[in-house]
Image (cartoon, rainbow, N blue to C red; front, side):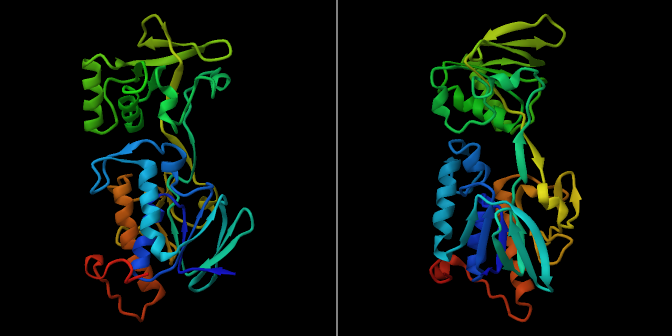
Length: 335
């Protein structure tokens, strides 16, 4: 029988950093993730994508951030159950939960932290009748290896952070980059928008706004797309790859059956400690919701830090929590 102080559901960046903060309080963690490796979306969807909002790193690749987090938590020896999805969460005693995966693994702990990102997810696909014909044959929803597009003609569709960031990155790799967006304004960070507009001015990116892709054409591989701008006559653009980046469609899956308070496919929490409506169960990172919520890795780190402080008091109500700064004792003093 496997036991831990905290079961963390989700081994993405927020779940991994929570192990570090828990380790400082000598709390043992067991992480469970449906993916076969740690890192969550960072590893699965965009391991080569630069991230700009991690303190102390002007820029760090997603995959490198995951590697650094794994190194950071190694002194605390967390246990992992990967490639398995949590199916059941049951309370077996007043302060003891039993978690069961789809492959029959069972772990017990007094505290459960749900750090499952967006839950299970799939890319939002544009409503094009023949799009499945070209999937992996010129249509990609996820960019894992940017060098795949070296010297190719690329069309990116979307107006959020992912579409903007990948347009900037691909402009340095592909031979041609076109960005199509349904509106004239963008939903992404101002800095990213400014970078794209600068590339447009320099002639490195072609921007088509108030437009959308309405058809895909090609024999064995995608050869061109048809674009419509407002009500003007449609026209074709020759290309090698069409990358629609309209975000992810979140699906809570079994999480929605655990008696938690859900709002808009997210778990409602108390911002004092990111606890849910069930004692001993917390939700941190993109999976939770509260007034003013920002879906940033940085915010998830903050949520995990406060959560473990509350978890310690929940597990050991009679012990005085003595928090020490790592600058004084170092990390080995906690391991």
